[in-house]
Length: 171
Image 1 (tube, rainbow, N blue to C red):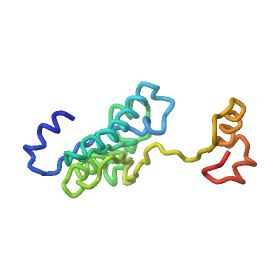
Image 2: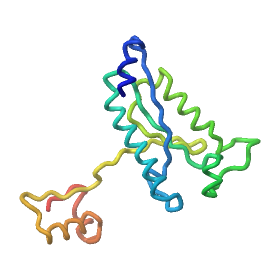
Image 3: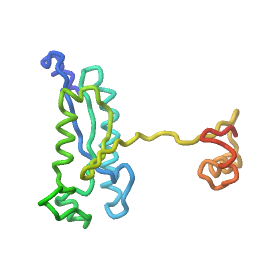
């Protein structure tokens, strides 16, 4: 980020973009690619979010493109199902991800930052960063038994509580 800060004055207020490439394996997992691949791709997504915060004051937008089922060496390596039909609409073409990256780097998208997009053929999706989807609240300290019961409630191990209580539950 030091390089971007130093070049900020040279850009004279012109918007600047950084587009990272990652893969869905780092966001949703995939057992056949291994932990190192998933961890690396997840780190790119996390780095994108952090850089978006750090670079915002310098008018630099930072986003990531996660392409899926793209024809190439990685698809061959993991035996991914990619489209062999290149005569008509080619759903496995890397051009889909390239077009999205080009748009995100354009001035027209200068307001978009800190986002991770999924591209799979004609589908473009937006990932939501990690978020708390349910929670328990307890005044005071948790005991081991409270924690055991609470975690079971959060994960749905006690379905009768899940039906009675909403997303945020008082303990």
